[in-house]
Amino acid sequence: MNSISTKRIPLTLCLGALLVLAACGGGGEAGTAPPAPVSALPPVATSVTGKTLAPAPANLSGNVRCENLVIGAVRLDSVIVPAGASCQLDGTVMIGTLEVQQGASVVATGVSIAGNLQAEAAADVLLQGRSQIVGAIQIKRGTTARIINSVVQGDLLFEQMQGPVDTRDMEVRGNLQAFANTGGVRIENNAVRGNMQCKDNTPAPITSGNSAGFEDQCTSAGSGGSGGSGGVATPPTLPPQGSNVVCAGLSLPAQTFQNVVVPAGASCSLTGTRLTGNLELESGARAAVADASIAGSVSADGAASLTMSGATVVTGAIQAVAVASAVIDAIEVRGDVQLMAGTGPTTLRGTRVGGNVQAEDNRGALSIEANRISGNLQCQGNTPAPSGAGNRAAQKQGQCALL
Image (cartoon, rainbow, N blue to C red):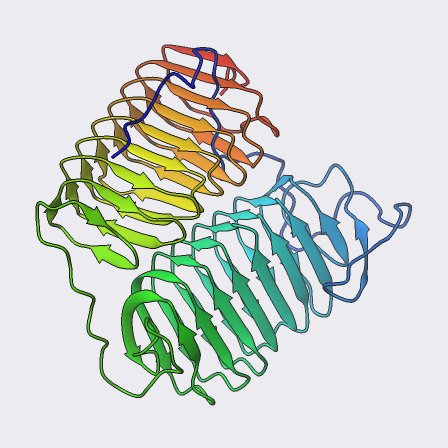
């Protein structure tokens, strides 16, 4: 088991984290149009929606109607895609919800949504690029939906969809549900902390490579095939207590193990798990950790996703290097937290840190909010600069001086 090295982190480092739910950016009324006229802006084409979209005004804030617009990495309250319109969101942060109305289309890449994503009778919904949804995703009575390579902390629901539905490479902390869809459902390579529930779909879902508790038409979703009817899949055999674990497609319960390694490309969940050693994520790995106790350290180098929440306590340090998505939410870390060269959204929120918090050269949206840091909060070289507020630290330096 590799130990975490601190040699690669200079003392001038800085930290970042993403999806801060801090209220910023004005507050328009729900349903109001963007504050600047669009007609004077040059149009841009999008091949995903098939419509010509205009770049959004630079001063967007509050609640926004995204009507044939492209919105970039700005912080908004909520976004509504009105009936029949198209919208493209690239790195947008929403402290409220994203609503897609009847006949509307949305392409959301690398977004952060503190509330829910709701689509009712929408034409097309595409979520991708390691997007982060703190609430739930509900897509009902629409035409097509593709929910890919992202993280949702609540449930993910597809209901009465008339066209093809595709969900893959997702991390779902609630349940994944597919009910009464008639256009075909494909569910592949998802890590689901809750249950995968599939009922009354015609044809039955095509499934493979998932980790979850499986029900009804999704009973064979972990091993391949197209589902069945009734029964619950036999869970994989857990390693013995006190052992070193290679966690690939496993949900480790409230038992004691030594070191846990999540191998390249694999997924693992730890709920109430106790480790006497370290947790290590290899390239492309995903791990969801809740209410766990880790006596050693956590290291993730090139991982796809690291989510840590609940009453989790890490006695050592957390080091995340070149991670595509990281959420550290209201836990306790007695050592340092180091976030380096992240490629996607990163959030550090409500966490008690006994050492320093450092972040450097992150290239995703970073958010740091309401943390209690015994050492220093140090941030530099992050693009965009970290956002957030309400942090306490011995010193706040660099890009985090005002956070």
